[in-house]
Structures are given as structure tokens and as C-alpha cells.
Length: 323
Image 1 (cartoon, rainbow, N blue to C red):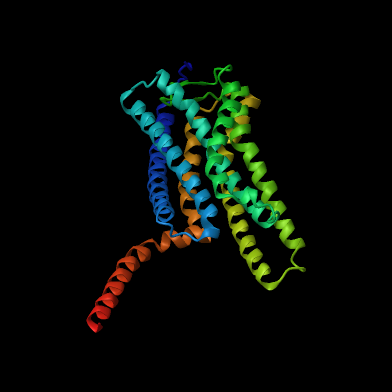
Image 2: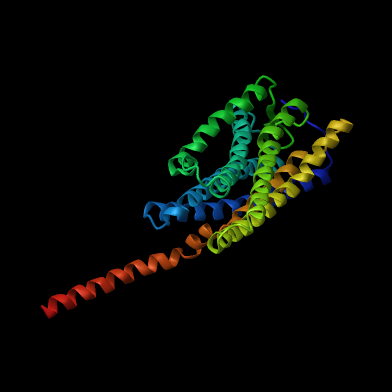
């Protein structure tokens, strides 16, 4: 258990405000991601998605499912922090430790889902002749393979280091920032490595499109221009995520250098993450045309289907009357 650090009343108040604000952002992210995921599942189940758009929509479904689950975890952590602040409740248990490790794994899966999306765009644009990597089944099972690999990579280091402990001043379990090897390994696997992969892939795609600009037909140029626009939007989102993570990362490196831990380090970190989750759940809708179309046209799809049935029934009745 982490030793309790004496903090002032003003710091406690600031911590309560941070947890309350994080709770609001996490709740918003949960609602938006749940609605969008259900709409995606509805369209896929009733086969309302074009064949060429299915992989893109499935990958978006993976991202929104990861946002939903991770936001629920953040919601639970913020509620425990608030209860700990108000009523001095303790949540120290083996389940708490388990959810601490689960939080790191889920965040890694969230970032890896963005890497999967970038990888598919790389294959579709740069290596379009490779059909095996454009298989829907591949991207359906890929997250299950990745989560097994991520669990092995993360936990084989974090568990021997006893990295996840109960943070008494925050009332939840997470990788303690005083365990420098543990927090650096978690940050490298869950954040730094996926972020570098994203930048490399999208920069490679952008360079390829610019190099091919003068030797393609008009139709291919138009498609590549659309892809380039989408990539630019996604890169803006990725950069936004990086910027929002800077406060927590800055405080961590300050602790490594000075040896003094900020009493609100964990809450500041998760506050920025909650903002990222909320912003991400909305920004993706306007960055990916296929996703935007099926979500905004959801009500139209539901109203057009009964209307078509009525028209079809009227035509049948007219045919019978004519006979």
C-alpha cells in the first residue's frame, strides 16, 4: 500500500474538483460511444453498410467499444475518488489491483485500435494489391490476438515489479508513479510505441500519395485526395491526444528528475485522459465519412424502410385489383 501523503485542504478541494470534472467527461464519453457503437452494430447486423466500407466501419466499432469500456473504468475510478474524498472510504482489495492492471491493458488496446485503423489505410492505399490484408475476417479477430500479446508484454514486467498498488490519496489502484521502471514501461507500451507507429504510418501514406500524384487517373486522384483529407483530420486528432497527455507526462518526468511527487499527479493525468475520451468520441464522427454517413442517416434508414414496405404493399394491392 502506498504511504499516505499529507496534503492541504486546498489540494483536497482541487482534487475533488478534478475528479468531479473527470466524472462528467467520462459520462459524456460513455453515452456517445455507447450510442455510436450500437448504431454501428445495427447497420452491420442488418447489412446496411457497403461492402467496400465494412472494414472501416468494423474498425470504428472496435475503437468506440474500447472507448466505452475504458470510459466505464475511468467512471468507476472517479466515483471511488469522490467517495474517498467525501466519506474516507477505502477500496483496497485484490479486485482493485486487478482493475488497476486492467486499466493499463484497456488503454493499450484503445491505442492499438487506432494503429489497426492506420494499418488498414496503409494496405488499402500503398499496398492495394495485397488482398489478404484487406480481409474482413482478419480485422475481426485481430483485436483478440493483440490483447493476448499486450497482456503478456505488459504484465510480464509490471507484475514482478509490483507496479500496481492502492493509491490511498486517490482511492483507486493504478501503476504507482514512484515505481519509475513500471510507469515508464506502461507508458512505452501503451502510449509511446503506438503513437510512433501512427505517425510513421500516416507520414508514409502522405508521402506515397504526393509521389503518385502525377501518374494517376482522375478517379484515383479524387479517391486519394479524399484519403489525404481523412488522414489529415485523423492526424489532428492524434496530435490533440498527444497534447492532452503532456500535463501528466510532464509531471511524471518532473518527479523522475526532482524526486518530488505532485499530490494530484494521478488525478491530473486522468483528467486530461477523460477530456481526450470525450473529444475523441465526437471528433471521430466528423473525421471518417463512412462513420458519419451511417450515424447521421440512422433515422433516415429507420423511416425509409417502413415507407418502402407501405409502397410495396400498395403496388401489390393495385396489381391484385387490376387482375
